[in-house]
Image 1: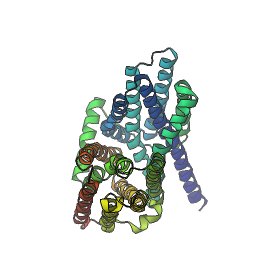
Image 2: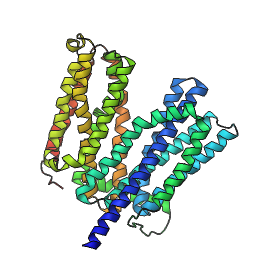
Image 3: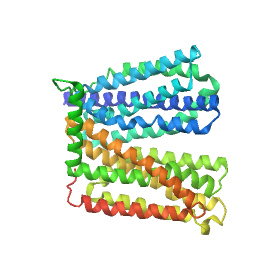
Image 4: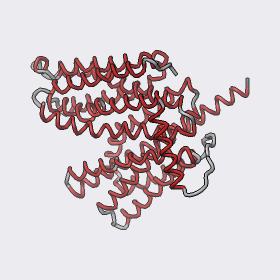
Length: 418
């Protein structure tokens, strides 16, 4: 009994250390990328360069399947620690460039790409570690906590980064992040993670190429994983861009809200995403493969009042009524989308063998995340075309999401719950 209790305590403590490490790493990287973007904006005065570089720094997500292959072939903890050491080294080298007045646009661009590359490599590695630190019945909660940290960093890091940039300057930010990254790496060395190294012979590049081929084959041939990836891509294509592009446009342009109300609206929607991530552990018992489509159906239904809030019928009442209607439906929609995403990822983690876990998670995350930018482009054109009738675009999103619900019902009807 004491042995079991000690084992549970040790597992919980290891997960706690992983959470702390991820919180510091994610916040530090997000803060640094935002502060560097502000610096670029200051030295160039051009918003297009600012936006382009921020987008370019996200492109390394395309390389995350390589990180997945590495995570399945080599020690995952060693890779995780190495990535934070790499962040510390990049931050330190960039500090040196600033101190000797060599912080050119090219150097900052390369640094942002490198930070983005480390972030893209880190996600599948951590995703592969989680199942070894959390029991199957706690997997949704564990993923929810880490997803909540990532969502929270999207809110806090820009605010904190802006404040620190204006108060202490770029050099001091780089000093702090360099020290923090190295301390995080040290903390992660204290996490007990089961070893998963696999022996190999021949060229490492050939081995990784074969591992990637195996990962794609397993992902595409496994019925449940293939279906889940398809639904994830659909949700990221149809709904994620609605929050990235649509929410700011609707609140600021369509509803013509003041800066204060706009900030409140965006903040509440972001908080709903975090709330959904934290609540997933409580609702996971009511969420299973057989009723998964009902949750997507509920999300699609919530788009109806959002469309109404953008219609002339409601907009004619002023700003408070459409804003309130938008939040009443947008908050549960954002929370449910977060819950559905975490649930799907957790199910994949449960059924995927450890030897393929890193590759499978990386492939799913990469394909889903690549779908979002394509959706953003379409939404950008859509809001331009329907700028006077945004409710039509939301109605199209409703049809797309409703179709995903029907597709989910068809795909999962013969799948057993996991």
